[in-house]
Length: 252
Image 1 (cartoon, rainbow, N blue to C red):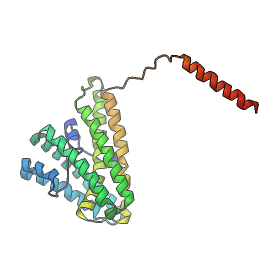
Image 2 (tube, helix red, strand yellow):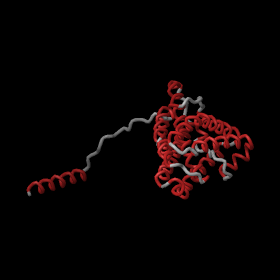
Image 3 (cartoon, helix red, strand yellow):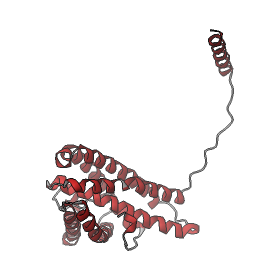
C-alpha cells in the first residue's frame, strides 16, 4: 500500500511546513522538553498518541501484519502530526520551531550512526541517514515555499501539490519514526518487517520530487541563457596544436 492510497483530511500549508522536523517521540530529551514546557499536557498527549501509533506498527512480526497495522494507524498518525503542527505554530515562536527542527535532524543523524547498526543493521542505518538528509533538503524547500507568493492563477494545482506533499512527507516520516522508536527504545524490528520499512523510506525521494515541483510552481526557474562563446587566440593555438597531434598519430 502506498501513501496515495490512504484517505486523509486536507491540511493547510502552515500545518505542514511546521511539522516536518518536529520531534514526535515521548522520550525526555532536550527536543521535547521545550515543547512540553510551553504547551504542557496538551502537546504531551498528542506526542504520546503519535508514539503509541508507531509502537503498534513496529511490534508486528510479519510484513502482512505490519502492512495491515500501518493502514489502520497511519490516518490517525497523520491527524495527530497535523495537530502537533497546529499546536507548535500557536505556542512556539518561529525561531524556536526552527531550532527544534535543526536539533531533531542533527540528533537523529547522530543516533543512526551510534545506535542504528546494533538496532536493525547497516542497510537500514544507511537508508535512514540518507532519508534524514533528504528530509533536510525538503525542509529547506518548505521554508522557501512558506515565504513565496501564492499563485492565484494556479490555485487548484497549488492545493493539489500541497496535499500530495503532505501525504508523502508524513508517509516518509512515519517510517523514520519506526526506526527512531526501534533504536531509541531498544525494540527490535522483525526481519519480515524490514523490507516494508525500507520501502517506506524510499518515499523520501518522491517527497522531494513533489516539493521541488511545488517550489517551481511558486517560483518558476528561468531557462539558462547561454551567451555567445568568444574564440580567443589561445583557443586557436590549442586547436592548431590538437590538430597537429591528430595528424602525427594518423601518420603511424
